[in-house]
Length: 496
Length: 119
Image (cartoon, rainbow over all chains, first blue to last red; front, side, top):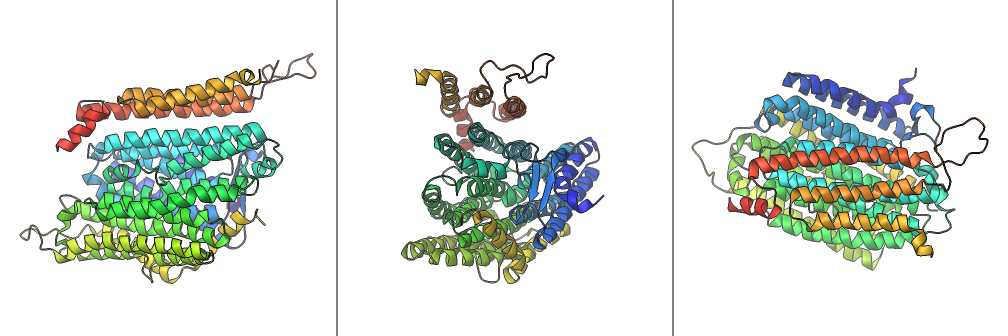
């Protein structure tokens, strides 16, 4: 048996098998250990497939050996490999960090079930990235969403509950819209396999139902991806979730919905509907511009660090959709690259916040006053992550913004105006990161008698690994760049 | 009457809007969840109605029937999965409402917002 052929299926099967095992384990440290090992194994599978994809291999797997279009096909190309790397790495890092961080947030007796839900979310998210079947995407989307509602509702703050309830309502509406869209397309084409769908959509005589399907799918996924102005669930859900959960889901949950949007739109609709690129761009671009400007502005006035970073996530999703709305290879490259780089930056920032939360009484900005003196390593990580978020040269954030700007400049005058939007957005990012720095470094400590100590070593090490990955991929962007440019070429490949 | 010929799709659209309207306008969290269930049921109707073939039977091979007409079983299978998803979403939603009631003492959205702003 050649293991390599089965990697795509193992990516889902390994976490799914581990879930009941973890749920049954009574000892919380054992549950943590098994969950972390599972997540690391998933990461290893993702790395192995990335290496394969970079060497020109295309992973295809037919579930139960039913050939497509009848059976469910799993498929891993450059885009899904990049997503899998992000998902599994974020999950592994956040799980390693949860060893200390979770103790203060969730009662010990519920740890095992919590980790089971975590691995279920991991399986769902990886499933979305792996599958090539439209209905399968819906099923995995609901698996991951239901599990992440459970994870987010686990926090100690009661305000998390209404926030999760709102997320549950809006997330379900989004997923149901997607389901309606898939149903309409199935009515017109009779297939659920994305590749097959792309070929059959061209033969459909009446385009109206397909057009309606495109609308339902785009809006449904935009809701899941928290695209402005459909982001209302995100800030509170991220703020009151347990810190490690925020680090995990902020890095990958919304990105995965964006991935489905890109895949569906560029594979099935882009080439086959009349004047679709224009409609796609005229929907996404204004939403992206408003996201960048308005969400960054809100973040500048936010007093809670977690909510500040959550608003900044809404803005960063704007950069990703802005790149995609150009419908060019260079724009898509920038967009996919930003999915990777923003996950790095936001993941490490939320891990740093988890470090802070271990030692500080609260996460309001005033609670940070003067703490940089007693927690130098944590704050250095926070600052480096912030620089990557702003897009300072030498960090990962710079690379994707650079590609986005060079993609925009090919558009002429309109492009220059959009570059101005990006520059303004980045300047606002400087402001909100600076507010953290100012509080932490330049204010007198509020309680000089008992300065906060440095966070536990394992937590700090994980945070620093994530932060150094930002610097590494800022200086050596070859890996994400190769993946995202070949992903963009493949997505645009249908369009001559 | 071509419009009336599509009456099952009209039912789908009306039920969908009713569900969505309930979710948006109701203040009570349980009623919101009920609206969400109605909204999802509408989609079940869409899937069930699309597989119906005039005069179609169950897709089972029978002796003596050489060229049977049968309804498409795939959408039914799909929607069975979606129904399961809907049930678990409602269950999870209700569980969250129980916890909201425990910690806030209310399941009216206004009250909950008011209680948080008191702090």
